[in-house]
Image 1 (cartoon, rainbow, N blue to C red):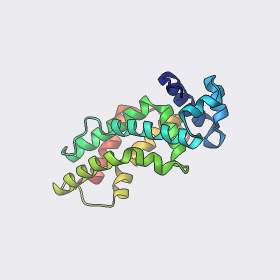
Image 2: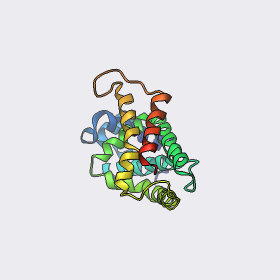
Image 3: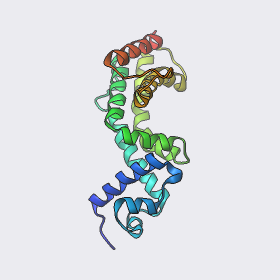
Image 4: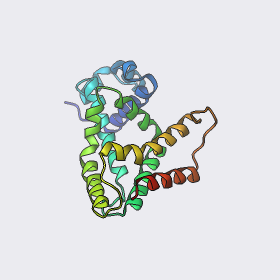
Length: 196
């Protein structure tokens, strides 16, 4: 049995992500991947059982990295505004630093891989965020609400701004470039809407 070559595994991962972002999941195949990596298809099957196994392993590995980035330097005991600010910093920083992987995750979110992708990082993340929410509610900083309501108010504005920046334009078609002023003014409005 051949030993895994970590450089080759990394190349396969990188090329798979690029191909999925470029061609979508439906246009992705092991043959295309092998060609992009200049290796034989048989070599791919040393590392992965099949196409699904490859996609899921990449999703799980990268999801864990993203989950860790989202809770970096975050303490569930933080006051609400400070904790939410750290979340915005982490999420925005991760997405800016990893635009290709972010587009890869977008492909997964609208596919049959979504549940496996989400479960790859949600376990630790849910625990940390759950503690944060319990703490800020117990301290009376925000009202108790369904998670979906909280997420929609707390993070949808951030993700919409990121989408506008990625597309280079707003919904009206006017050019859009994210600035710290826009980012943090939006954040202030979100905090104002959520705080008691």
